[in-house]
Image (cartoon, rainbow, N blue to C red):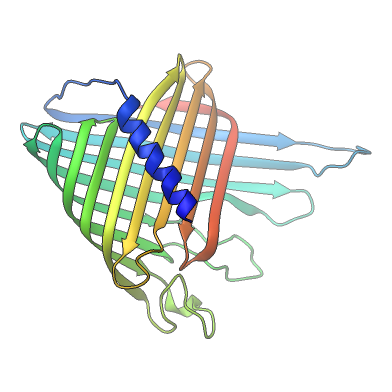
Length: 280
């Protein structure tokens, strides 16, 4: 875990050091978003080398709505994703499932620094889609809510780091899904919430790697003062969009999570495919 934290810290320093982007602030609302549909399909018939026919589809929304007026900045990002995969002879399964809203309010302090307050909410749409079991998750179970005051370093809408040393965190679950004699995402059996207080660091960096290729990086770190503060929760997402034309692109999404209350190890997710995109 220490190696992961050092790698993330290096990424933040590299981001701040090597970014050359400049963006003039403008008053009012600035909105931008993208709807994408990724499709992957493989078919095998009497293929001696082996293989299972499968099809995967993923629908995603990435929407930014930011407000700026004088010394006030209010940045919002909504991320929605849901994907299913069907392997021949097996039940339909999820390939992606995510709901996340980030809201960050800042008031100019000095230079690129702002007094800030943030709110972050994360959950998923559905359970594991297997009709034979209840599944470990469903909508709002678990749900993660974080909020707190802090200081924001913001160079532009595409490069910012927020430090919140007094962040409240609520883990929300359906207590009816609690596993017998075990904590459920850190929530004690028979309860529906878990409260934490700690340090939260959130970083965002979007850059153009080359013409028609953009990369978005979203990083969240959290340390709970009340219990095992050395076990830092990590949530990092990288989205790469390689545009073919106005409506077609190759999209790569990679996410890694470390949260020892959910799983004692790194969780990783990767989705890649050629997709149909619509910008708005």
